[in-house]
Amino acid sequence: MQPLVGITCSEDSERQRYFLGFRYARAVETSGGIPLLLPASEKSVTIFARLLDGLLLSGGVDVDPVFFDEEPVPGMGEMTPQRDAFEILLTREFLAMDKPILAVCRGIQVLNIAAGGDIYQDIYSQYNGALKHQQHALREFPSHGVVIGPDTKLRKIANADKIRVNSFHHQAVRKIAPGFITGARSNDGIVEAIESQNHKFVLGIQWHPECTWERDAYSRKLFAAFVEAC
Ligand code: MN
Image (cartoon, rainbow, N blue to C red; front, side, top):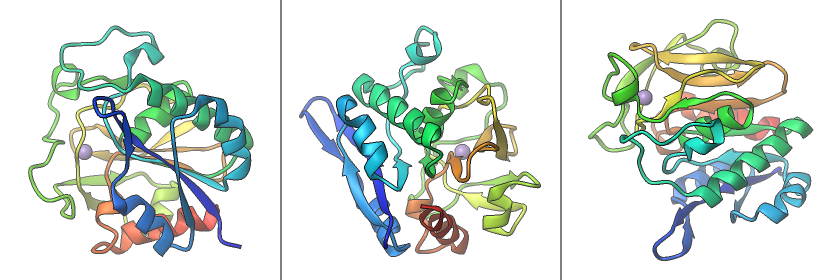
């Protein structure tokens, strides 16, 4: 049977709407999964986790620093606290059940915080020597390289030690959650991927493979490996 993959949505606070780019669902569908969009319903977390075979944490705006006991720095951007709370609870439920998680961009931040790590709220004011991580090129194109760690799931999936990725973030993983390892770093030392050592398939990546899977074999392999795990 095809696995049921839940995908979290962004929130438009002003117009009070959920939204999600087409590409996440298409990438899941093309890889053999059934995509299902999830509203930020905290009360439904237990049922969602029981029903779904996998969780795709989608990209979006910044995560509220209250979830790792910090006050916001001036470089913090837009926040959606309801989405944060929902995604963190849902992620913890998936981790507890050891069900597969693929966390994209904002998702890697949510995953790391949910598992007990923290993040840079704004790398440009909190991290010395950061490269440009908010590219001004189409999302289909890579803008910087990442070095993939040896003995990582990512290395096996990509079958390469270096790949080029797109980049649309100003936050990044800082303290890696217990039980997780670095999957990849950009050349400035920023963590670009993390993975759990204690779960079958829990992977966070800072880039957006849903935008490049039509062009890149490694992006297709990433979604294929995720859906396969589901
Ligand atoms: Mn980047």
